[in-house]
Length: 221
Image (cartoon, rainbow, N blue to C red; front, top):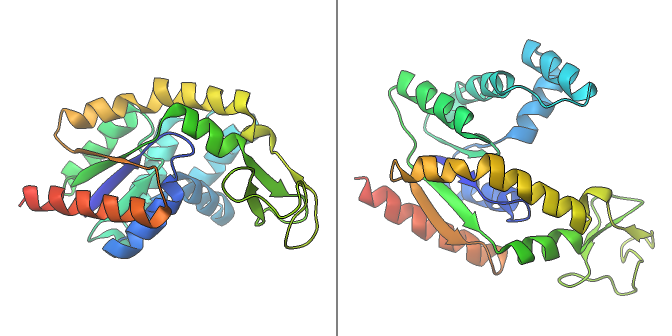
């Protein structure tokens, strides 16, 4: 299957992508991983991306599209893939359609993870990270530490990252609504969008997604 995963920040896309890719036996291709791999390997696209990032500028669509094209051309993606974070806007979605047409294939589904805006703010603004290890993550409501402000694992101080503040989260949501949400309408016009609720436990959301994708796959014959 060839799937695009969309949803607002805090919808759990990364978590769901990992589970879905494993269940469907297809590679999970995330924009973050593409950038890290190209930059660490010193590819031409990686160098171009780094120059923009170092200057504090957005990486142009053509660079992101080039990285995605190279990754989808790898052998493990021949039978399908799950894209997470790409396409990020309608221009990138049109470029992806063109790439796939050139290969004689098409997307099977666009999985839209739906989460109420207040829940997104609650999820992200409630996160607390240990100063000693970013792998130790808590949530003031869902996974609180035993002692407030103290890491259960190492006793380190827990803090809220700047980009997890409510003000920053709301700004990120504005960007999502303006830039990324229009691709949902773009794909709806192609009959590809499958919307599911991303509320509940991780396993419940994964099961919901698998069921929706199987229905969609069967519908497409």
